[in-house]
Length: 213
Image (tube, rainbow, N blue to C red; front, side):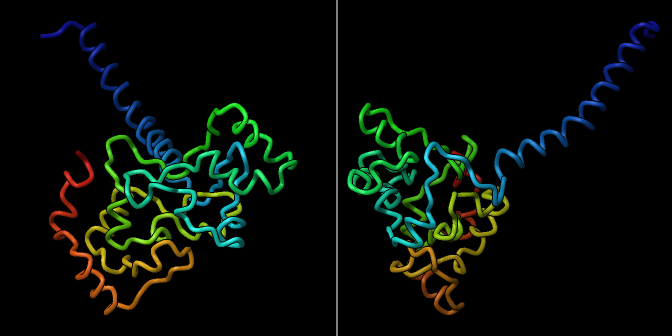
């Protein structure tokens, strides 16, 4: 039915598809891991900001810098004005803070790099999670021990769903939500917190439309 040339073209196409799958799928997987997992790898910043120093040593509350974490989808990057609350007086001549003072002089924001980046097709709301008792440490790890911030948890779909299937063990009393040293609560306290927080049903929490809108 087909000419030898057509048969050869079809065979070549099938071969190319197979080669593409063999080479492309692992490459995509490697890219995906590099883009969305990169666990434990510090992210270089315009200024080497240390959560270990500011949070662990100085005890600065998360909300002081991440001002919208309780009310918005995004926790927010600290503005230059917030940083200069202290650093207009402290370490004003430190070379490492030259970019901060330049930002204050020009009004151009510091180009902080995101450490926790989700794909555009994922809907995530910090405010909702905080309101329901999910502590910062559950997703961000012990930032009070990080000289430079890195991703502590994978933040991949299965990881999120595991929590949505059984959220109670990840809940914390409101007083410890922003405590970087927060530890897991007992099973009975977790069950009580789940009742107090009026969580949605497991069906709703694991429905596709909850995170993909």
